[in-house]
Image 1 (cartoon, one colour):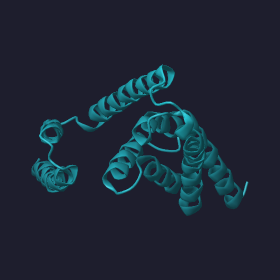
Image 2: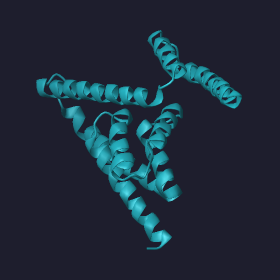
Image 3: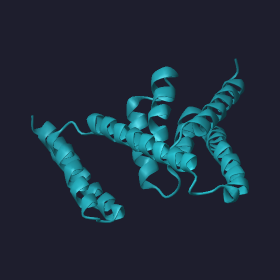
Image 4: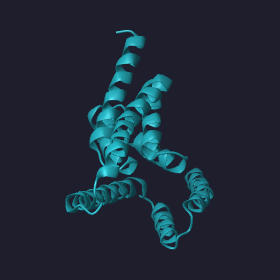
Length: 190
């Protein structure tokens, strides 16, 4: 199998995998994270656990839709620029079609309809659970040292006090760099 045909095969896998994820996972980018991890790190072994954690960090900190950011990141890692385009197209196309259909038919629906209200209440509860599970798994994987746990707890407190997330990120970057520098000095001293 040539390198070109392998890249084409990976692009097709990326498109169809992200299209299925976008079509069947409700709740947006954060709800997609466990499915992306399961699909690309556990089943297909195309990403390592560290790469998945990097994907989450990058997709959360750069502007844009989390699902699209994740798709571009995974696509670049798996098949370069063509992979990024394929994954992004797969992640966006189902959502675009669904939103277009909703825009056409939603105005004629009664917002007080008990079935519709119940549907949205159930979906919101399920999405909240998915996001909490993802956050817990990320905490377990990322926060192993005392510094990381303390920084995560401090960020949580700041979020609860409505500090803008951009300031939390900008504050965490130099603290993380400082902690790495201290850790490196300690290792050099041993």
